[in-house]
Image (cartoon, rainbow, N blue to C red; front, top):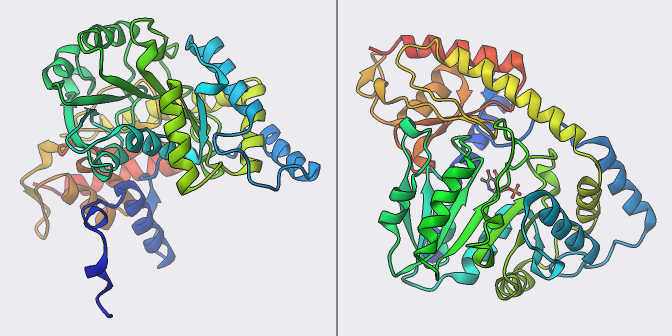
Length: 402
Ligand SMILES: Cc1ncc(COP(=O)(O)O)c(C=O)c1O
């Protein structure tokens, strides 16, 4: 057998590669060729995991008790700690039995979608969306349906937009605030508006991805699962990657109604088992310590947001808004569509991200990957020096388009 591509399953052939990871790979390859690439494409803090969390992992190894398979839904003390955090910080009525710890929030989201989707079910995705939502829904056999926010409203979908796409086939809505790719944060009133719509649809689940909870410049995080009207059917997803600079440790979790938590445990038990034991001990230390390092990192992201926004606003044709969280900005670049530098014409956001990569040697991600074909995503989880140089290069190459 020589053509191995022909034996792949349709569901894999039809699955898009993660655009953010693909762009990061391309940037790495160019860097390895000696090209001076500035990578603003990956959603990863550029800080080190705080020292006390590193020390907890070392202590867990030295204790010698954590070398075997951990329980599939996570160590009980970690599940209890997460449930307590959700009760005290988020106002969510959670107990250990509601918690499943997974290999990153990415796995948590996949577990949930796989657990609830039958063929024909619709999953409403608040758009612009994080890259994996759409493809995981398709992989699970569900139909993704999009409720689309516009830049005029900081990309936030209104309650009416949401109401318009919910049908009797809707199984769940997938919601995230602060959002990746837009950094937008829904206010308490805006979330209350969504809750009102959901009250009209009592059989529809809410999946709330709160992975950027701590990177919020708007003065406080609001969990939709704290609203009594929907608390019994909200699945809250969170993890340690972003707020604690722990992307490589791979620990995420859900708090879900017990039946859904059990289903996720079943899926995970067949596919990966419990998440890495030492990383779970480190996550428990992250939960128990104060949030000083997390707050310092957030203050730094806010400073960089203002730096990048100021520089982007100096670029003629770039349309921006003010993101209130995460570490991304998602400018609308459609003013450049139809323009050319003489050799390449920019017809869409894919062209733009390739143009910026090839000409400015800066990697950003096409908005297509997030359901927003007029935009590009720029991560500002990078040093001031890199950010200033990247914005200068982007400004220069965009000035060549006419
Ligand atoms: C919105 C959103 N959800 C989930 C994840 C997955 O995070 P984790 O590293 O915990 O798998 C990411 C990571 O980029 C994200 O941006």
